[in-house]
Image (tube, rainbow, N blue to C red; front, side, top):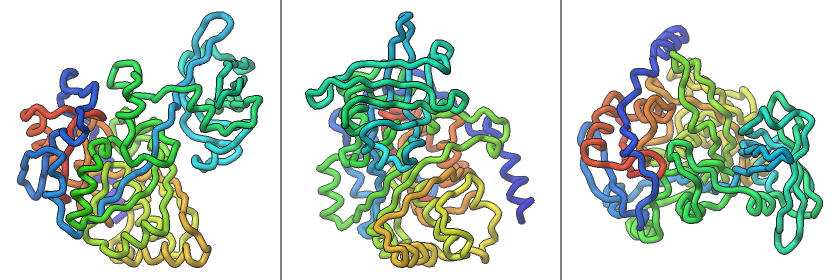
Length: 409
């Protein structure tokens, strides 16, 4: 069994998941209002076209929508050297004093983050860069230097007792996806956030959620469609193209996920009609199932899902969705936990068997990306006809583009 799945996975070639995306089909700006975007509905080979404001009409009343409530932080900052050189620092993930992103935002004196560094050749291992900020009316001197040059771990420290989140808000700018090929503008501070964003820590928005408005939420509630939330702090790895010939060789970056006990209870009420909003929510939900597998099989209580962990199992070795979720609920009760925090590298590509998710609300993704592979896993080879139809009908692509509701094959 193991060799069989591995041989099939290694035979997948990234060029098989490419398509032609003209530059003029990439949406540089969002539509206003948000819910006026186009909506493609795919169900068992049938494609229909509507607008997103009519989403509710296309969901069964017993649907549970699961949203990612992460909030994009102004994670990109620029520092000027005395020589005049500009160094760009993009915050990716906290390392010290904690790797828990929500907690890292609350530290008040210093921290270490893994970063992407622009113009690194000008930022030597012994350099210290500084800038002066005004935070809540206070003058603050922020300094940065390397904690680990090779790993791009940057130490940041400041001279006032102020939370790091406030430092970031005063210092940085919202990091738009590189494929938008434009500078961040004032309007992006609002439009590149979902209306339900709550938990600070992402460097990229869960863009499928950008289409939701209070009007759509009201319609969903009136129909009886339930909603619940989890948190996955989207990292810059979401934009990383697959460069390896075989998809299994692609390095997946671990992302932090937070689940409440309330979410577990909502999922247990109906394991048959769960629809995630966005690929991050889908990856989070499927990762949650595999954490339940680890608990059910008494493997470990560590929530860390490796990228290929799901694939070698035989069907008879695995619990049902309800059994896996019950294992998590029992574990949380025993440990008196209101939430569980984990990390996932899960890589979903054709051959993956979905355990919790019946469908997906999502935008249109970059050619040859991990997200195209995920869509192909969900709907099979029909992904090509879906994308061709969207292209032919004038849909807008990528983060600020139009939407789709895809039901699992």
